[in-house]
Image 1 (tube, rainbow over the protein chains, first blue to last red):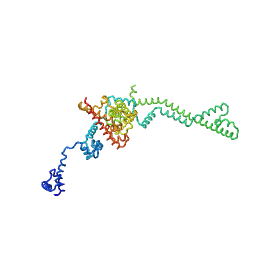
Image 2 (spheres, chains in turn blue, brown):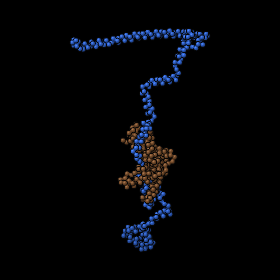
Image 3 (cartoon, chains in turn yellow, green):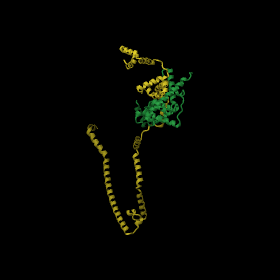
Image 4 (cartoon, rainbow over the protein chains, first blue to last red):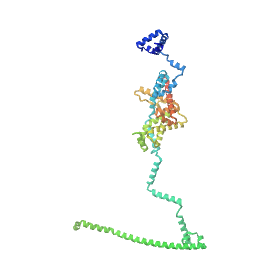
Length: 294
Length: 190
């Protein structure tokens, strides 16, 4: 056995895991090699070291002289540690830190308590009268909840058109609108009647041109105006004749209609007596015995 | 009756459903207001205002599944507005015995009740000592249980920032609690 073969087996030697053959080889090599004997002695001290009591602040002292305290880095992960969201490897080394750090472990305990207690603060009973006060406040402010614009317009329109006087009001508004847009249609007629009255007072012949044309033009004797006036008067006479014949036709038609209505009315007046007669005949036909009995 | 049905009835003007909604969520809204303003009377008024706002704007909450985050958002906005109106955040303050009534624990025996209750009071005190942002993150994430995404959208802060802030806030709270426990334990027994 050489020295490197011994170094491979040194750990198993101190743990007593070597086979008898290997042990014999190792012991033979130790008798011959002084450096390996020294190594075996030191190794036995090293393997027994964990059994010795360590100074309680050894780790902290070492960290102070090397990287500094690890609490800052540990506290970055405490919330994830408490929530169980930390990776296994990191959880293990954080647990090692917590074993030796009372400050961080107190924080972990505190975080665990908070995790239980904080959700319990989410609901607080406001007292028995609270809901009554809320209901009173809401009913005072609004009878019904506010609805969006379109349904409100629809409801308003339905209420409006279902009013009994809506058609009259619509006609009235429409008339006012037409008058506002096109002006009063009776104004021209009104002026016409005033002019006719003025002409009648002056005892002149009342014709349509004299009504339509202003007085200055009517009194002018120029040739064009004279012929125009004659033509207009002729036209007026023709219109008058046409109107008279139309009136005669209307009167004749009205009289014939009147005669027809009167005849119908007379026949309608005799209808009850005729109906009674027909009923009596039907009665005697249906009940001949009652007639003989009488 | 699940939340969607209750909300549907509320939108139809059903007062009974509205009462059920208020009763079901009042404790949470009141807790939010209490954690923000740190005063029972103000918290009650603010919680009331939150419900009035919810009632007026119920039609704006289109997704029923998002009702709770929406409600928390309204509560938070109202509380923050209130604090802004005061021009300053409320100072840290100890809670008196009357106001601490809600922190009573539900333990099995008086000793356990007292221990748990005193622990809650200490946690509440530690929360009050946090900075504004850390307190808000602790409230939203740890107390109300909102997700990081919801908090990010609510506070208009990047997701990574919320995550790192959340861990830092928890750690700060844990340190405060350790310090308070130390001072509590150091106090002479009376």
